[in-house]
Length: 281
Image 1 (cartoon, rainbow, N blue to C red):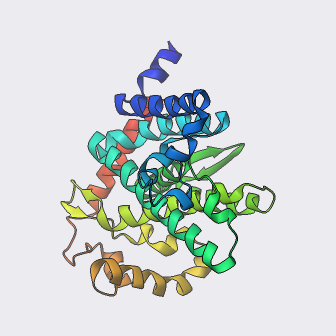
Image 2: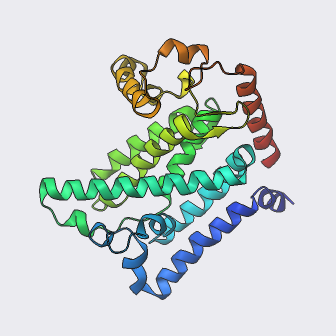
């Protein structure tokens, strides 16, 4: 009974994407020669540009496909009912593509800086960039919700930062960190840019989330925010054409300068998420 209820909480879209992840791994085991055609290898990306799309859905290890599949199903059970299936799929496609582009550009740049050919021939792939982006989505809509990380209970608003720190820390002790670290970090960054500036919010009919709780500096400890706020202003200038006013964020102005309908819509979103979580448990 509990098992069927748990299974029923998974959406049809998430189940379909899970089949894609598992199927991609199985296909890679049966036909290993297709690896260079589906993963992101910077030296091959120019002729095989579709790698920028396919790499994010291809896992090269059984552990990777297990984590990605479970993460997709669990996060999707929370986020898809809130965003809607179309927006949820759009988020995955956009974040995956932007993350792959950033990884490709970074690898090429590091090659020209260091002249180490390993940056050109490393096989980048995996869904962990999008999984990191899901954490940013939870930080946005339910920042005070406690999530379990091993034996710890961590508020959702700190999960992206914690995952980034753990990824950076473990990179000093693993040989293949270059294959996953850029994807995790760019996944967090690209998802924040999309949610902050471009996601259309049906509750307010505006794009993005201008709230101070979702600013760039909110990913960092309080004492660093005076240093990071000027950087956030540059982001706002790049994407909105003007330097942001932190007081406007606090008041609840939208990114185009108009006043948001009020905090009631944000509270309604969070109440809906809480209802979805309780319904799925």
